[in-house]
Length: 228
Image (tube, rainbow, N blue to C red; front, side, top):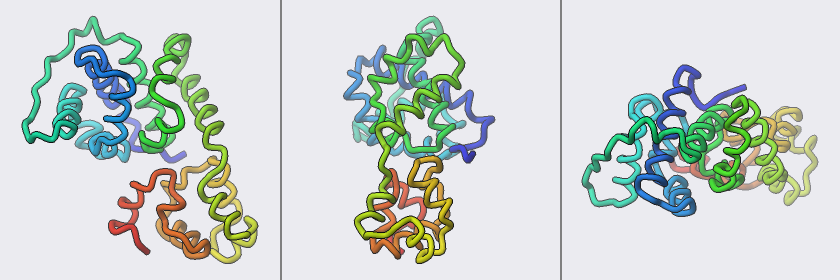
């Protein structure tokens, strides 16, 4: 399975995101909803999600949160935050960030896509009983909830609008039938597909590549101007 970035970054990534969550909601008193919107709109979190080493491994949680706040406030001033005492780190919010970071690495979906399917408040509520379980149990539950709320893929929607069967789309696009089935069933992450694969599908379906991705922002990674 293709992950968001190399596994040796994961522990640092979990610690950093856990600290970001803890500081935002416990030291700076952001509400869950306000903090969630900050995350969804944050270019730093987006870069983190695609495995940019500067964000995944180069910044501590405090530094990452400072960058997020700096962008959010948009005043051009770098913000120096206090380092929270270690005794405060084992909070529900810290755990939620720690666990979410692992799940994002595992599934390689953008944080925005994950949070749109499983809201942050629901992840925090999963602290009981999942903090006492293996992280793999959390991943399994997140996958179940994600698939449940994203049962119909954008690829399937566009294909049905065009009145094509999976076999017809495969024949016209040159993309293997099994690959199309895997994307439609969310077994594979279409955001991680090769550019040629998405381009072929989009051409046959007479749509843009953004129309087929879980998160249109990923089109900018594939093709800078978002066009074929």
